[in-house]
Amino acid sequence: MNQPTQDIPENWPSDITFITEQTYSDAVTPDQRAGLSRTCTDSEAWAKLSPEALQSPCPRLKIVTINDEKHPACGQRGIFAAQQLDPDALVIVYKGHVHTNSMSDQDPHSDYDLSLDRELGLSVDAARSGNEARFANDYRGIAERPNAEFRDCFVQVPCSKRAGGLKWERRVGIYVLSAGNAGKRKAGIKAREEILVNYGKGYWEGRKTVASFRKDAEMLRIAKLALDA
Image (spheres, rainbow, N blue to C red):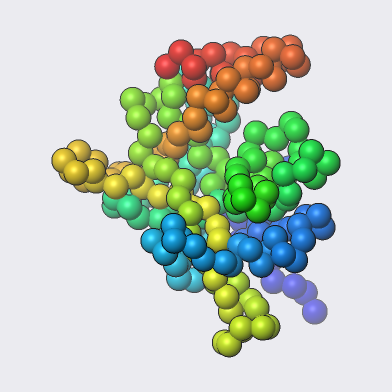
């Protein structure tokens, strides 16, 4: 019997595997995986996402190849809102391959590695497989400030040991920034606007160092543009 084909977002690169669920390194221990479901004082405020919010491909986004020569990611892809996104709304959950922070279990060349849980020593890497979230660009050199941010959240995953066969597990999501006390961001993100996050200057300093070591002129150019912005 033929297996149903998986829907893939428009403009998805052919050399990257599109996934709808996280994958896990063999080095991730059962205790580490279980730790992703443990709650703490901070996690009480984290959103618990419904299956409807996790629809894949994400109907809230479009992947666009950037042609603006002034854009730091010119020639690469970005994600743009396909509809109005209100303040604090979920944009998308960041998905990829979950691995330990051991040097032997990570890709030193990846530009898509995001910390999942520092205490557990886990990160999620979307270099070779992921979803639309991997194309969220840093705001530097594009806009005065980001319009979205990374936040911790929970999703439901199968679990034979729990009543109902499900449990909550930690993820990292991209969310529209809140409106702010003065309501300056009450407009949220309008349709056709690029989703822009803050990678942090430390990220770009690291990219600049790597680019210099590799003698990668294009990477160095992008890092300098971001740091000078």
